[in-house]
Image 1 (cartoon, chains in turn cyan, yellow):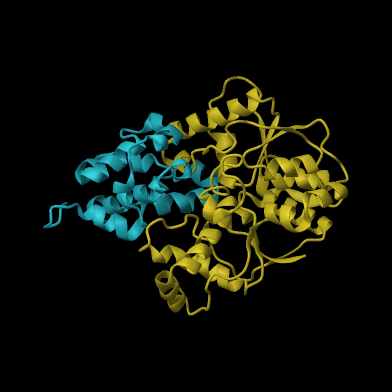
Image 2 (cartoon, rainbow over the protein chains, first blue to last red):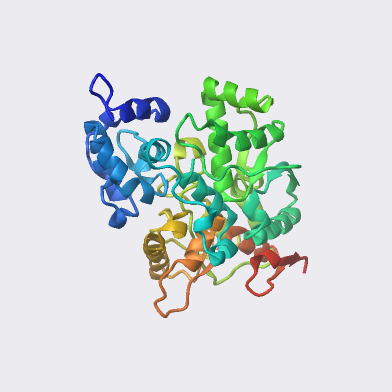
Length: 132
Length: 275
């Protein structure tokens, strides 16, 4: 979705709500080198920032990457530009949950065995990630 | 040494033995942990978007309940959320005003927010701890597994060096263990991906365990119930004996000479008693 100025609304929101500016990234790729789950991603972490720079919101909304991101904060720890990519991933997830697809995962999606064994912390944090 | 103590939901459930062993060890070390009355969930994840104010209500309520006294938690996730919520309350007048007005509490970021490991390192001191050890863990090849939430973001958590931490190894050394360093000790275990993306969590866990095994570790310690769950439940079996995973407090209690009785596999029924 673009604003009348032709810029991405997601990016404007991203800057305001996460304090992160995708345009300060110079695509060194350290985040992608640091990420522990790249094998499961369809867009590498540095590519997510590039897509944000280009305002490719629809493509980002379809990507698996923000949902695989586990918010481990390793990318931010290694970024030479001090960008917190985990916050941007959260912004993409929120824009999908709030404006596009609604909640993705709830208690009904868990098996009785998972409910028995999973630590409470996993349930609460999982629901927080996939529901708003 | 007296502290307010925030357990969090998992410490009363799946990770009850982390609480029991910590309480027993703390008593033996002269550390008083006074549980907050009527505490609520920490929120489990720190909200990464600034308009998600509702997720800040429970941690700020907890922080305010400590009344400016040092607040200790054991679960890595609880400590992460409380510490970051405190930093936000200090930093953002907007968030602070909205949250404290809604909760009708006074809180502007005061008080020390500590993980129990920091109490051992900074207030008690590992040298002192070493002197109080009754049953040194001699010959136990132990490795630390830090995971993410205690270390990062390091500017806020200020827990240890995010790339080369030593607090858990220093504790293990004080307990007399044979400390082994594994290169993947600060890598993510997959967190809640074990709920939705089991294959991804299996990859992250396999790498961590393989790295520890290659370093010669026979056991790992962690401070996070979810890390422990993943390390114990998400690994792909390779036919070898799995590496044992413990809460840091279990080894602490053991080295303090406190016996821990485990009822089968149900960790919530574990009992701690003075030997």
